[in-house]
Image (tube, rainbow, N blue to C red; front, side):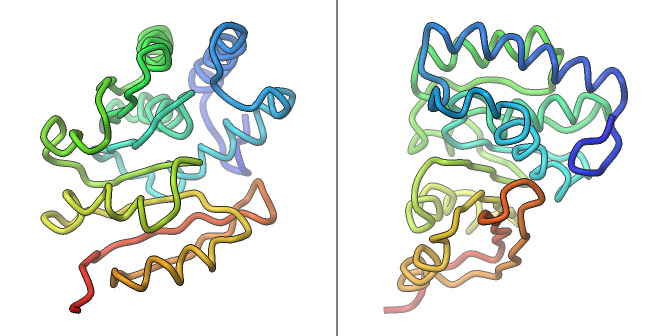
Length: 205
């Protein structure tokens, strides 16, 4: 099977397909994504989320902020299963969504765990991580505030999905933050981008 033009094993394909089945089942009861995008679940959500892992394929420790319906955190955790290394800490304060995430991880054998806490408390629960991910959560300035506890103390990189207005968000974020940036064009959504951020620091007043 090809995922964004890259091969994955039959076992990984089966795990992703099982996740898709679980997602559709749970989405009938709780709001996991906008119902209007359910018909595009594979391309718009699963394949889009897989790009995060494909940009950082070396197994590592992830903190996935506001994991929601599992994008990208559960997808990263499923892809890590093939390497039998690395781990994803999924941060999700909504108890119903956290319950779904636990079931998804357990039934797919994915390499992750769920922390049903607010993001502001995540640094204490997950004191170390190598990479941070978030998708459809908050503007960049807020994401950097959430991530600073890790990024200013460790050599941590962040990968954030952003849409067509990302330049506006970048300009706002650069008002208070300095950072190194790599822009990765989305292989799935032509108007989207993934921002890879490192070396985060507060700007001097």
